[in-house]
Image 1 (cartoon, rainbow, N blue to C red):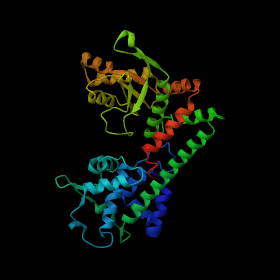
Image 2 (spheres, helix red, strand yellow):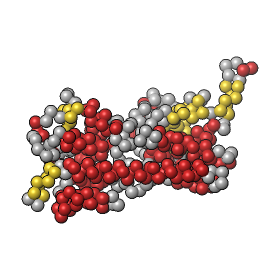
Image 3 (cartoon, rainbow, N blue to C red):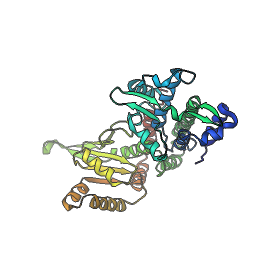
Image 4 (tube, rainbow, N blue to C red):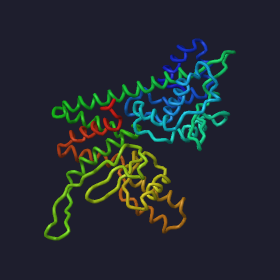
Length: 368
């Protein structure tokens, strides 16, 4: 598989290994895996970045180098890196502050197996009891053209280059937002067009969640409900949407919460009905609104969920219970309609400001 960042990978390999670069790439499943995971490098901020699994490789290879094993020493006698040290290091890396432990523990190895089912090795070796980890040297020390080559330094440089590319793309995204903010009163249509571009099905899941939240927050804020404990003390109150944490967080299926109605929202990019039912189960079948990164109609999505429920649960009462837990489905078209409603009220700048604020928080922009 070749893509725009593949050329960068080969530049690094040529720098380290000269004319053996192609042969080394051909003989390295790990380099081919990294090539797969860096496809989004030059696709801008709207393309999903792959940091979790790449950083799992990165911190172990870095630990291998820091231990002096790339130069000499018997790595087989190394007691292994502590999970806590590796996890801490992952979160120190750019865009890594909220990474979870899945990649180090199983996800990276599982995905590697998916790409290379006939490979005899997995990249990460771990002992669960001691929480010690090693990089599998069978994948970073190769014999190519009768030469022993060590890929460790090249792997670090390749991943650093990928991160630099993604950082540059995100900084460009923030700069565009800031520029539009400066002209928000002069060219509101340009701002709207920019936001609509962030609702496309191919955008990074984190960007989509941020944009959908920003639109819905502005739209709901102008909607009023009346609350009170006694008839003569009922007061008007605007609907307020709150973001519960970082995107893609393991938060039990709650991405947004609405006050005062107590509605729960979950953002998803999948149309796999099992994911919907899993989120419903996490909340013990509390009603939930799904914000779906899909251009399918609400009717089509609803029918898909119903059919999936019938296939998974043959009992009609169970099917009806799951379907009844779906309070609302908000697709891309509904988000566009909400944005239009916000524009009609002259509040498009509020959406842009929220996108800037949430993006900086999500990607640790201020910290970095």
